[in-house]
Amino acid sequence: MRYPNRLSTPLFFFLGSLLAVQACASSGSKPKPAPSPSNSVALGTSHDDLAPALRKAPPVKDDTRPTPGKATHVAGQLLVAFENSAAAAKRAPIFAKYQVKEVEKVGASELYLVKLPDGAKLEDLRQKISAEPGVRYAEPNAVLRTFRN
Image (cartoon, rainbow, N blue to C red; front, top):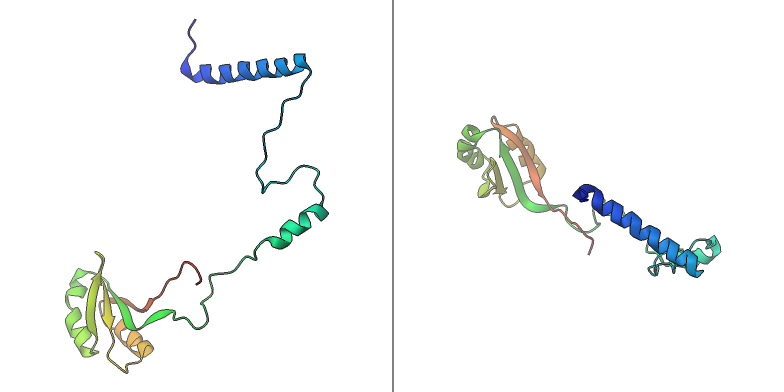
């Protein structure tokens, strides 16, 4: 008789386990427990026994806050997004009006990295460029960090 594949594996596993239990029971020996990893805790361990291990654990840091002394954005740069390709095609007069220099187009979207003129205030230009028709937004070029150094 042939068993279907979906039943044969669990069936043979069950039969093998049953034979192992019977062999241990008939010999009078107990099966040996699997070795535990060094970071596991045995059952019956008291809190007093765990205290030294808990004191060694490093504190959890909240890395979502800005690091003091490190920049949160690139100085003198804005990311300017346009509503569509037609609005982006008219970007040259907007950039010339505020004397910003187009550095590069970012990806396949209508997003452009621009460099501000020396001495220009980032927040003032951001608000003015954002108010232009066809501009979706203008934001500082943020610096993203994954780990604190």
